[in-house]
Image (cartoon, rainbow, N blue to C red; front, side):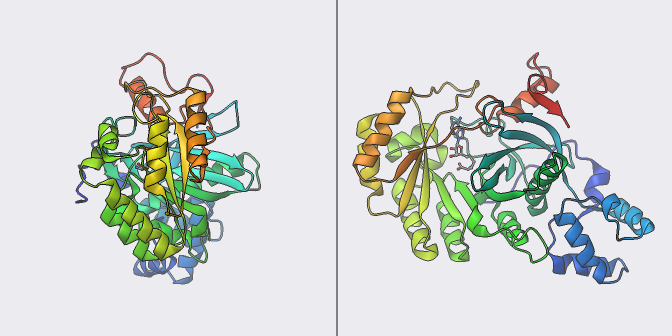
Amino acid sequence: MDNMMPDAAGRDDAAQEKTELTGMTEAELTEWVKAQGMPAFRGKQIFQWIHRGADFEEMTNLPASLRESLSGLAVAQPVSIRLHQVSRLDGTVKFLFRLMDENCVEGVLMRYHYGYSLCISTQVGCRMGCKFCASTLDGCVRNLTAGEMLGEILAANRFLRERGEEERVSHVVLMGSGEPLDNYENVIRFFRLLREENGLRLSLRNVSLSTCGLVPRMRQLAEENLPVTLCVSLHAPNDEVRRQTMPIANRYSMEEILDACRYYVEKTGRRVIFEYALVDGVNSAPAQARELAGRLRGLQCHVNLIPLNEVRERKLRGVREDTVRRFLDTLTRERISATRRREMGDDIDGACGQLRRKTLAAETGQTGKPASSGSGQEA
Ligand code: SAH
């Protein structure tokens, strides 16, 4: 796959000329600092501030004049929170993040017993075209930079801090809008940033990446030898059914995907997670559960069943609870490890791309109801 993306319309030229420091490693930032004529130790200081979520004006151990000149030259926090919605059901927070060029992406902050997990976006939109997904309706606008992916976490951490919480994001899932393996180089750089000594020091064991199945990139990821959990959006027991909802299935067969998964397990020792959204009349029959079990047998894996989150613009329908239960029971009887994914933030447009679409539509007058009504809050 090539990586050519159409450029975003309406960029802020001034912001675009500034250097984004967020995507730099400490070593790179130190080089940049030196090139600006500053002493090298400023590199470490600025790096630490950035990863704590601070903007230049908050970098109190830098002289005021330096903070000001840096603000004119560079960007420390490329992501801000445009609005957020808090679920009344479970406290899940849905963010609409604003990027420097005014593009928006979504993120979801979930509280688990092991800590805060943030679901981040990797592209503005998506070009994979899955028929059940809202993120892909208008195609892909552009890739996110590594700094922007990190910036999503930093923005969520600032949110937690402002709410008076001690805890910060400890787990990250690349499961928001976009196909992470279609933005491969930036994602790998982002992983590197997470591990930086003076940065978040987030273990990649706490990171999951979800793909619709870009086989060559899955194999490449396996070779990076990172302890990242690989999740694969399967959503079907065979190629014929998969092709009904996922255009990528015309490019790679399920057998190729499963081979790449076996390779991933072999290389990393980590089991693969399969995501399976149950769609009425498409992939949810008990015979299909048995077929799926047959295909997955012998592979170190776990199946996550997701009741389809219905998207207004799409015709596909979800299934009743008893259908989920029956599908799950069939897999379990066939000795395939499976669970029904806990649905979080069901009342706040938790599914991919829905909040962004609603907000954009409200702005362009396509619907009368702004997304910031209800439980939403402009930041
Ligand atoms: N492009 C990646 C990651 C983003 S989507 C991928 O395809 O995996 C994250 C997950 O949400 C995927 O499993 C995707 O198939 C699923 N998803 C998208 N829209 C959905 C919907 N309306 N209901 C349930 N799951 C959905």
